[in-house]
Image 1 (cartoon, helix red, strand yellow):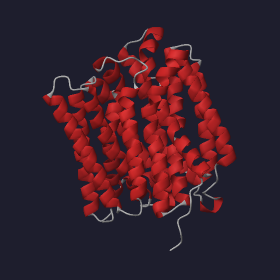
Image 2 (tube, helix red, strand yellow; image 1 turned 180 degrees about the horizontal axis):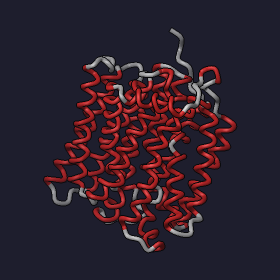
Image 3 (cartoon, one colour; image 1 turned 30 degrees about the horizontal axis):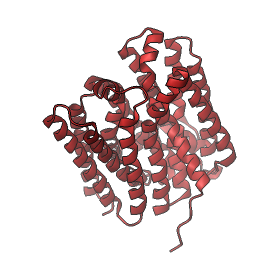
Image 4 (cartoon, one colour; image 1 turned 135 degrees about the vertical axis):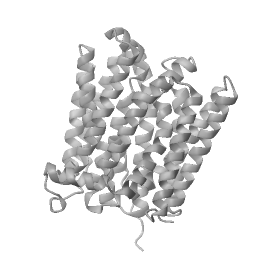
Length: 400
């Protein structure tokens, strides 16, 4: 057996940074929502559409980024999409009206997702086995951390520079990553391995992948499991500002427990790579998340105003379980179609993002920060995720 190859630190950091662009852009503006409502003279439902306007194009374009990288190469797709994201962010910062801001938020969403989608295919091009899982774990951790860190950063930027400063920050981030990608990103999908860029063929490939029942079981398991923590992130403004009565610079009260859970899960997942089978690691993560959500439900049903610290502990446990599960689950999905990894990553992301769009753009505002309802929703998602994992395992698609 050949010794494991060390993953270059620069490449790992670049892929992790590219993966965080879109989730970071999703909710950086959360602390600025009240100020944006006042400046544009719109209501809370209208301002919520800044999230929907981003997420729906993000989901739709996730079907395109992967096939484009299969046809044109990973590097060129990454560089051009991140560059377009930077330009759209600049346009948001300069937007004269709410309609213009909505339009360029949609462009942000269309371009921002390539980093994570194409990055997953690039990882699998380069590495196998435990090495791939460790790098996938690092990238997934940053992807998961980004929407948790974003409102913390956004709150301080808002206090110092106003809401437009948030979009100037995103434009700068995009520019830095374009330069870094041009200098450091390798091309891992050479011309001889590329497929012709025919829209009909790409659509048929995506349809074939999406009709595979094992692919759907694994993808829905991952999407529903991730939804268990995304419901809290989508409800952050209501929880922090309305329920906990904190200020725009105190979003860390919610997101530090989530970040801590992701970081701890990332460390555990990396250590488990190659030591524990995918099925056991996925089961462990599902069990931890289910226990944390059930504890949160009992806590909020049995106590009129439970201490914030106890609520933070349940959020930590939820994030911990999600991070343990996601890397091996994603690698299993990518290995179903080794020749179409870009397309597989796109279809997987589309399903996950479509579900995330509904949760963050529709369900979270309806629950209005009610922590008992949020815990119940999280627990239901985990139970459904466990059901799909069991069906996939029974079908022999997860190694025991």
